[in-house]
Every structure is written in C-alpha cells, then in structure tokens.
Amino acid sequence: MREKWRLDTNLIHNKQTEDKHTGAIAQAIIPAVAYSFPDCETAADAVSGKKEAIYYGRYGNPTLRTLEAKMAVLENGESALGVSSGMAAISIALLTFLQQGDHLIVTKDVYGGTHKFLTTLAPRFGITFDFVDCTTLDNIQQAVKSNTKAVYIETPSNPLLTVLDIEGIAKLTNRYGIPLIIDNTFMSPYLQKPLDLGADIVVHSATKYLNGHGDVIAGFVIGKSQDIKFMRQNLMGDLGQVLNAWDSFLILRGLKTLGLRVERHCSNAQKIAEFLEEHPLIEKVYYPGLPSHPQHELAKKQMKGMGGIVSFELKGGIEAGKSFINALNLAMISFSLGDPETLVQHPATMTHSSIPANERINFGITDGLIRLSLGLEDSLDIIDDLEQALSKVNYLVTSSF
Ligand code: PLP
Image (tube, rainbow, N blue to C red; front, side, top):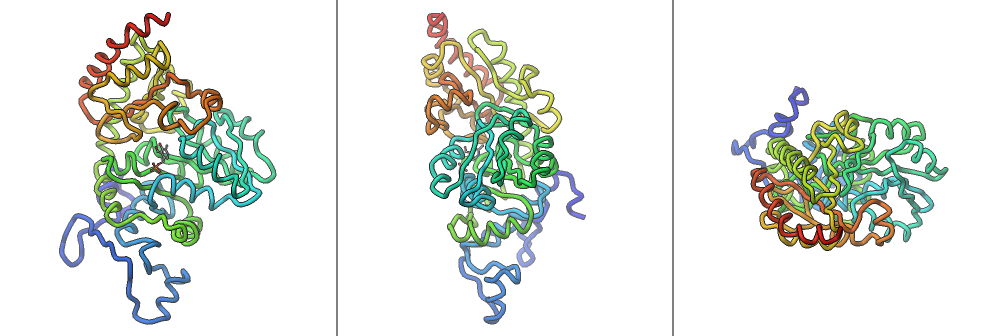
C-alpha cells in the first residue's frame, strides 16, 4: 500500500511512522553499539546472517536501518546500504564486483575522488581499468575485455555535466552479463532512477542533495538484496564504514524537503545557465537544460529535471577565471555541492587537482573551467553577484584578445 504513494509523499512518510511508545513523529536517534539477545542461539543466528538482526554498531543501527529502507524505496531498489561517505559507497560497490585480475570500464569524466581511488588504490589489488568516452555505445563495446567485471558511470558527470544513455548502456552490459554501477549524486532519486532504466547498482554521495544542508558526510549503495548483504557483512562492516545514528537522523530530516529543494536548485540553475550563455564574457556553458548541450534531448528523456550544477568557461582563461571566483561575494568558494548556499569552485586546482594536467585536459576539464552549485537563494541575487564579479574581470578578458 505504502509503495503506491507518489515520490513527494514517500519522501515524508515511507518507512516512517510515529514512535509506538511515545507518539513522537520525528525519527528516534538510537546510537546503541551493543544489542542484547534472549539466548546464545539467537545471537549466533544474528551474527551468521541466518536471521536478520542488528547485533553490533559497526554493522548498522536502527536509525540507519530506517533510512536504508527509505532509500531503497526512493531508488526502487530491493535494498540499500548507508555508509560513512560517498567514497565509501563507491569503493564498496567497486570492490564487491572486482578482485585481483579483473578489469573495469569507467566513464572518462568522473568525480576526482573516484579517479584517485582507481588510479592509486585499485592497482595495488591487481585491478585494471580503462577510462572510456561512454557517450557512444560502440566505445564501451570495444573496451570490453574477457576479464571486464563492471562498468562504472556518472551521469550527469562531475564537473562537465556529460549525460550518458543509461538505458542503452544497461542493455549492452546486460548482454555481457556485466553489472552497471551508476553514481546518481548529481540527480538524487528525485530526478533520475537508474535502476528503473536497467542499471544494477546506484551509488550516492549523500553529503550533497540527499542530506542537503552541508553538515553530514555520508553515502549509499542501492541494489539487489544479496549484493547489499555481501557489502554490509564483508566490506562496510569489516572495513568499519558504518553511518552513525545521528547523521542518519539528519539525512532522514533532510530527505523530507528533497523535492522542494531540488526543484529550486533546478530552477535557479536553469536561470543562471541562460544568463551565462547570453553573457559576452562567457566562452562556453555546460548545463543539460540548455538546448545547446550535446545531450539535451537525452537529458529530457531520462531526467525529471536538469539538476543544480552549471559549469562554464570564462573568456581569458585561468587568470580571468580565478579573479572572477575571487570577486564573488554571495557565492562561496567551496569543494562541496548540493547545499542551500551557492558554491563555486575551480576543478583544475580543487576537486580534480589529483588528476595529472594532461589527463585532466584530455577529459575536457580545462584550466579555465568553473563549477557552480546553485543554492536556494533568490536567483536575482545570484545573477547580481555573477554580474558584479564579471564586470571586475572585464579588463582581463578584453586584454587577452
Ligand atoms: N560522487 C560525486 C559525483 C561527488 O561529487 C562526490 C563528492 O564531491 C563524491 C561522489 C564523493 O562523496 P563524499 O565526499 O561524500 O565521499
């Protein structure tokens, strides 16, 4: 019955009812590490997995379990695992399907942390990978090897907002029997449901839109129950990456306003992308909501909204770009995204600085690229701020011609 609710109702009510004893509507925070059992046999069944139970805080807590059940519903998955960061979710998902001697296909413009994990840590475990331009299915098909055990994509990508055809890629990976893992951080389940489009695993940095207030680091993996069970028992629990009860509570609270927030993020981003595209000092704008975006039609097909991130290049290159960022008053220079505040950053020297320069430029992340995470403020104030900063760098841009 509950699953029949629509998304906005699910965000508030699904898997959450008032407390049986107190009537409290807000979720209880249960930080207990230890749980008692009536006898040794019941305790043994819990630890062996024969009976589903929380038995030690490193493997979960009741507040987190409520949140996980809710995330599974929101992504239309069988089961969800909440962990201590987006990178924990990504590494757990990858290590579930990859072991020594295996190969991974990964989209070429991924989040810098994912790139770093693959290039520095994965080789130590004998895992190989190829960064592939996944905008065409042929490229993926050609990259498949006999030992390819997973395809990992991010759509829209960070920071270039490249949109990939989830349904098309899922059909291909299905044919090869290879799991498709998708980072859905930029969209949240409010705007895109990769599992409905054929993906096998969804990962999230819940640090961003899901919590939405810039005060929690967390991640999720959503997929089939047997995969999630393996991740909980053998990776999350054993590596110690559990999400604590307090942070789980904050995300449950944040989720209630996800729809309202995401709609505002999207409408602000659309207005700012249109403003920037018209501005004479801007070289190029990357936003799937603009008809000039190469995958605009695909974005309209698979996404319910275009998201809150806009990237762009200023004429005048890196010097003009940095001076522009430094001249902003309202937008804050920050590494994160998806917060109520508008945040700005320079991928080449900040979020993607761990990628060697030649590789980064090859991926399309130029020195002049700027990423804006549009917040929830009045769009006119954001535009005023951008305008005053642009007027300050005007001389740098014109002198570079
Ligand atoms: N995925 C994407 C798309 C991100 O932007 C980030 C962080 O910025 C992550 C994953 C990693 O998330 P976390 O910082 O929660 O580990």
